Image 1 (tube, rainbow, N blue to C red):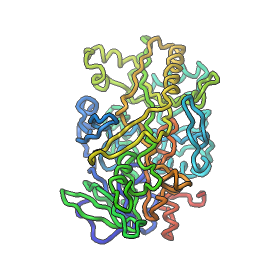
Image 2: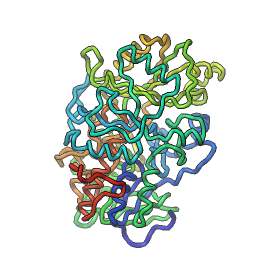
Image 3: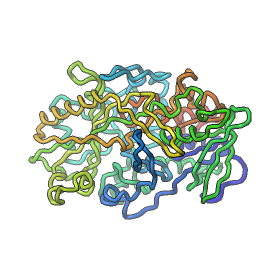
Image 4: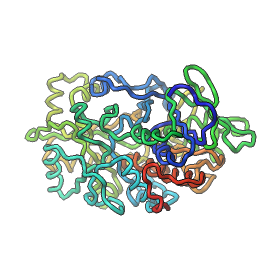
Length: 517
């Protein structure tokens, strides 16, 4: 992971998160020479990785980085730069988009547009992604679950005793609590410390994140990774079509890396910013931006934390995050609009809650957390062209025009009713700050029309035949579930497509290429 290699790889992947790592794994057995560059380094094992006060109170792992908001005010974004990207801290929920999420869907405040293909196109790749990430789950519990050919390879992460009792309470209300599909080896995780995994960094200790998947790719001799190597801009060839190389900075030295195929996988904000920063006379609005959509249609789920209390029901759970509810995903249960997904958070403890309630004495915080059941309410954010990433004097400016606020407010109200009816007399809610990166996506959207999209359905730039963008940027809608599995499934689909263009097949991880679409 040190010196920049001599010679040009066949494929250069910029970024090692879910999209980049999964794409590399899908291509590793083709014999193509693949180099992945990552601006961060491998996250070292350290006591702070299981220290809630260090993570949530002191921000030990947060980057020293500044963006500005739509009003020009600076803020420290919640993105992370390590080998494996943001997945090092993810909640490991691997839900498929629902079948209707691929169709136009009317919400309280607008319409979520249709995808350029139906769910069936991605279904076999969802199954492959679930196998790759060793997802634990139980098919058939959730009425909104899309069609699937078979069940999960591993049983679900078991409910702790208080959560099992909670599941029964909710079922008695006529709801359909289901086991969250999780990329977590719970036995390994707990061996390294009895903590939640949600928002805790993984140091190769039980979460199956992008770094784990990348390790599968790196077992092949033609695949290599360079850490602490930051892409600064793309270089456009004289023909204005091909990408000639990527300018990178490493140890203060700038150089150019070239490859036959270049893939951006640095996340919805950074990939858009990199394309915009690569503007030339031939591409004055940025690379891959003839349509003008690069940086636009930024989406960030509408999210609220909800704590339900019952003084008769203590909750000494360690990790808690095993249940979800989709009973109000497509309607409010009363003939109203879609509301969204509800799932347990990792167990809230006093050190986690303290930064939000600094005035509350620690003994009282511990008492509150000892009886709280902690939920994450998530509603779809609709694509708005004025919600966007731009550059301001070289700095990233993120202007989020929050949408579908009505639907999210209705979800919060509905869940208050549900939890009170289930015997929780006290229900508290707090919306997530807009600066929290709640599944950022949509800034380099894909589609069939080059006038309204930057990428084709294979995530290749309409304007540049050797440029792909394979991260959450491509998503045309945010749906109301965690996007990691959808990104991974599309990455495997794109890997199969690229492998065939190379004359090989995407078999590094046992992909069922006969199931391709």
